[in-house]
Image 1: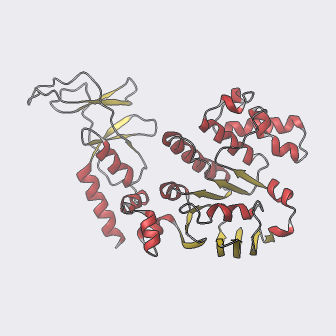
Image 2: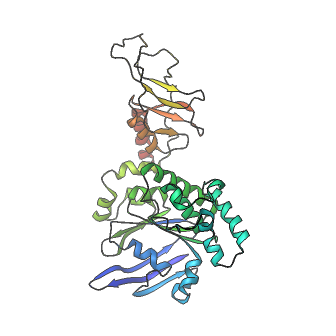
Image 3: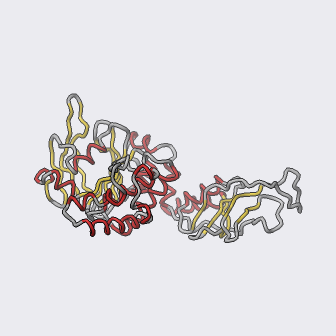
Length: 357
């Protein structure tokens, strides 16, 4: 367990962190979130002594970090930063094995471990001999995670690791991190300024306010449902009710047969490939009338998908983002299972709300 006991970091004229007392659960993801300059990154960096506290004590596994030599402490923890921080003159495999080599692991076993970790983070072994500038931003971040995991550290510090990549890659990396956590159960402290990222990843979320104080520390569902003050409510945003739907299962949402383009339809029809995966929507022809299945030839993108096991937020988003008003439901393999209606998703939301009262 990582614990802060009355920790402060004071710079001339201002407090970056003020009297922080907080316990991080072992084997869970704890997210520090807040606006710029609120002390969340400073708090993270005090754990591995990249920043020394002005006062107070930080312990890891019951041991005061100030009693551990800084280089020894840092090698005992994984650290992932915003820009991956890979050594540009070293190959991917050598970057991943860096900490192992510093810990005196022989070259051959270190490189074998590096190859295993590349597979763990979803990168093929064929990338092992590439250099960082031959990788995409998302691939570099995966290498950074692999390097942080190389020495099998119990604690992993992640300082806005996904903020420099595009939204699609960011979502993929978030899901990859959750998958890794299910397998490895590390104690992860993750810094972000994005409340959506915090609620997706965090088992618990610490909302930092300006001046380096923690305004609220709770599970994400509680922060969305019951922000403790106006600062937290404003930071979470006016659409916190929509975000809160991420914690309501969507299994009660009815799924109806999809109007596939192979069947005669006068309205919107869904095009699928040979494996029944959605390709997009055919819009009704402007001259369409009842019994006339004529449609425009182009395909319109279909919006987000609702997968089996997804929460109500995903069901509602699928229905609202679809040009047809019909949210496409798919199975775990991405094959169409049917469609969901916004009106029925809203009814399921109301039923879930009443069930919580």
